Length: 86
Image (cartoon, rainbow, N blue to C red; front, side, top):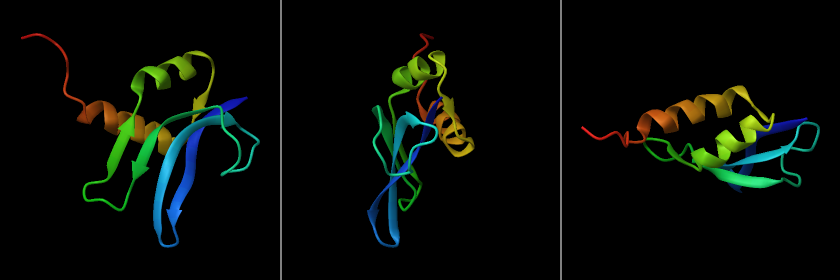
């Protein structure tokens, strides 16, 4: 089964994360299928860069986001300006 989860990068005491698609049973920092974006909680406000089209693609293929990643997806969608014409 596939999961969309965080992969820790960055220095000691200065975490940053990649949002990746990987096998559910694999190690946290092990091999992954695709990098979907980044999350940097040390910035104020926290910096979230996400490829939302690829996230939707992987969710449609059955990948399940973790609770934290689900929260980040919602936050990134809210922060994106809507592309609707007025």
